Image 1 (cartoon, each protein chain N blue to C red):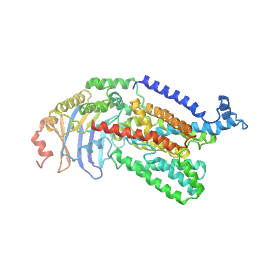
Image 2: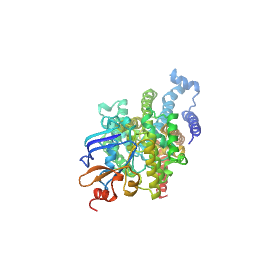
Image 3: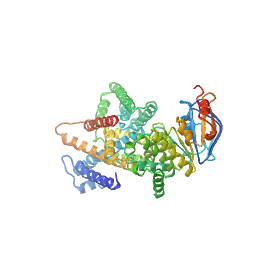
Image 4: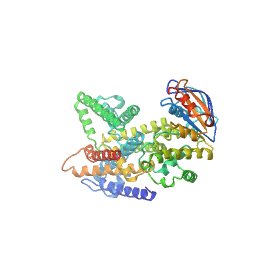
Length: 238
Length: 335
């Protein structure tokens, strides 16, 4: 699904180095690392918002740098931490905007697009939200519809930058369980960054750990590691 | 808002526009019959004074009122969505001032490149384009809506200062021509200029068609729009081009007209409660045309008592709307 070959990422100079990483579909990955280490930069780079410093990323077999933007938008998507303030936009229209990579130059949507939105609304059980304006939602609901929009976008790879950052304990669980469910049912390759070690270890199949000294990302299976190992790798100064 | 209500609103707007256009075109000493109006356009009788009045004064004035109101409102809406800032507009962010500066250069320094009447349009459009580019560059460095506004206002003041320097150095006749232009008036267009104006206007409307989808996506923020496969560079060029054509064209013929571009789209958004730019653009165009038509009818009514520049009437209407928006947003923030 997502293959990373000796990639260096960063804004101008290399912030992180990834020798080789192969992310598979149907799996939920938790990205863990210190504040400011480059988790967001890493995720933004993978969706093509920031150019690679060096190396190669293959998204479903296609090179990130040669793929056209519109095609890339059908393969990989990123949900950011903050939800934009939008006036006069209903949840339903917001979800329909997930079809933008598939619609024609005037953005006309058809019955199939509407049916897809309805199926995602059913999957996430958010029918009660669809007529509301996005500006009226709580933080948990905003996170939920942001995920729903990405599902409507139908990308094989879904990245989420701290999806649980502003949520209470109950909503954190809810969001991550939904992510787990969608990953399995839709056979997605899902990566989310988080500072909640315990919950992340509970739901993620694999963990991507960032070492602040070597600036490397290492992949480990969640059931073959311990909290102590993770802490000593990601936060060695503790 | 449902489709039915949108259709009803649009119908009401169009009907009002038709009625007020007829009222506007009939304002003045002579009343023009339909036959005279028709003949003045298609088979002009040069001995008939009514036909000449209609062709050279009435028709151009009503046409430019409609186009200017619609164009400035569309330009304002584009800028508001593009900068993600409800307080953006061509006059307040200094774009009109940019047009004025280049027109001032054209009228008062007599650059041969700009000296013809077509030269004034191209000068105004060029000025608007350059200033939109300035704003685009500045907007990359400021995050807050109010900062961009202050930069725009500063840009406008700075430009107006430069215009005054040019004024002080120019000869009396050029200065007079420029001063009259600067008051803002709908009476400077002649019949022969109308086809060219319609053509430019339609061209910009054509470009707009390709902006609807990007603008609808831009409400999610520029980054998410880019992620959804929208070409950000192309959108930037198209937006700046449209804003420059609308603002430049109108500024060249009518002088700077304040507040229409800022106030009208905001009032439309409050009424329509949609973020669909098909509806927002068409409603802003219709309502903007209506507002400027009403402003000019007022101006013509008051003409016998007091001669007001168009700019002051639009400001009387627009400035309170801006304050209202600021207060409304403040209430939003505190709630």
